[in-house]
Image 1: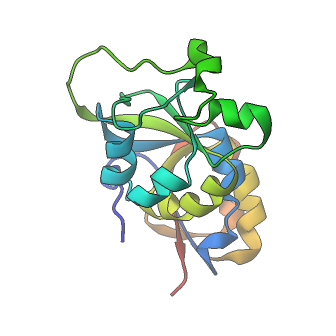
Image 2 (image 1 turned 30 degrees about the horizontal axis):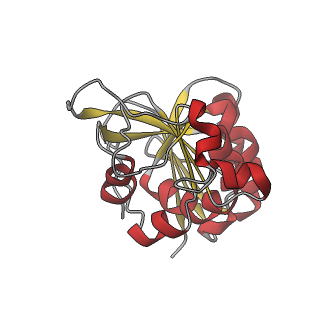
Image 3 (image 1 turned 60 degrees about the vertical axis):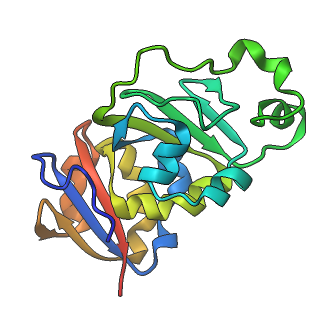
Length: 202
């Protein structure tokens, strides 16, 4: 079991057990963005592979487009992710736009004005949160593992995905106590943040 760094905090928690991890609509939730508890201040590679368990080969071969705070990243070994940053990941996108945004591509020079130049805030590292956005196949492939670890999202942002996943929900646990989907209505109609974990039934 992958442990969330927020496991022992006072934040409200929501744990779902589904008939299969692929039953959760990851694209909708991760497209909006979720927060993750991490040790920030390292490189994109260190964060994804060292902390979140993404395979080195997956980062190198599958994740072709990387943004930090809306700026395209070319070097995942040097580009730094700090507390509060927004990290966006995508598989290869089609057409000229996709080729231009692809990290390390021959057309990267065409978007030099929106390329990430790195951070000059020093080498301090500390715990905090970053916002992660995932798109297309990356959301579907990485989303289930991250949901098992635990992601932070506002109740309103969970409303649509949870309703879509409801037919596959086997058990619900809210802040350590059994609950029903109907009993989540107050949470899903609010901006309160919740630590969500989704697991597959054994």
